[in-house]
Structure formats: C-alpha cells, structure tokens
Length: 186
Image (cartoon, rainbow, N blue to C red; front, top):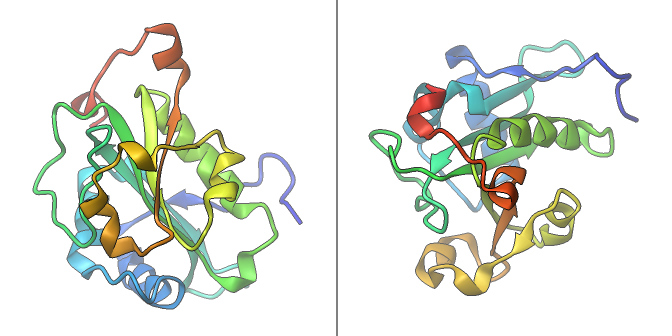
C-alpha cells in the first residue's frame, strides 16, 4: 500500500546513516560487496542524489536507501570503486544503488524514491543504471531502455550474467535544452 500524497518517508541520507546502509546492503545485495568508504564517498560527493528510508516501525535502522551521482553517459564506474571527485564532464546521473528491506516491498516506496531521483536527473540528458537480479522489466516501467549492446562488457561482468546497462533519456535530451553539469549541482 502506498503512502498518501505528501507523506514521503524518504529523507536525505546523512553520514550517521552509513552503518545502517552497510548493514542493509549486506542483506539485500550479498553478491555485490562495496566497501563502506565507497558508499560514504558517494554521499560526500553528491548528497542531493542520496536518500534514506528510516525504519518503518520506528526502529533506528534503515529500511531503504538510494544512491546516485553524476557520471559520463556510457561509462558507469566499476563496482566498489572510489571516484575521488565528480567528473566535471558528467552528462548523466548514475543510479548507483537502491535497496529496500523485505518489509518495504509492495508499498510503492521504491517508485517514490526513484521518482525523486529522476527529478534530480532532469538536469542531465540521461539517467543510467546497471540492472541486476533480472529487474529490467521493473526499470522499463520508469522509462529505462536496455542499452546493454552499447556497454563495455567488462564493466558488466562483476554484476553477473543477468546485468543490463539501462538508460532513461530525459526531456532535456529530447528538446536539446540541456544546461548545466555535475559541478552546477554541487
């Protein structure tokens, strides 16, 4: 069941959430380990692209998170890699990770977070991601198109055989009105 309009439970991710993020990632993405400093760096570099879903029962732990940051279209960073800085030539928003605890499924919470991140992504010609666990049909509902054929196969290997590189082109690309860059959003 979705929450009524205007009652978003998602909030900006904060540094004090990172231990909960790591714990949830270990449960939801056990095959895709990333060091805690990788997640901390994503938050430090682009906080406006990071959201947290506090525990649904009022507990202190996180029930969900989403991380995104600017990157070059067609060049998502490898798994478990520190960036050092945002690429000033970034022309896409990379949806790095989304995770929801089992208690969140079927409540519309993923769609709410994705909608908010796609709003951030409107500043770019595209939003990209690597789909795992056979979730391509889910991402297609949000306008993402499978562009695996154009991706560097070596970058997909760590994500498994079902990994798909997917892109959602924004209205900025369709109309040719893209302005701004990764550094404009900082």
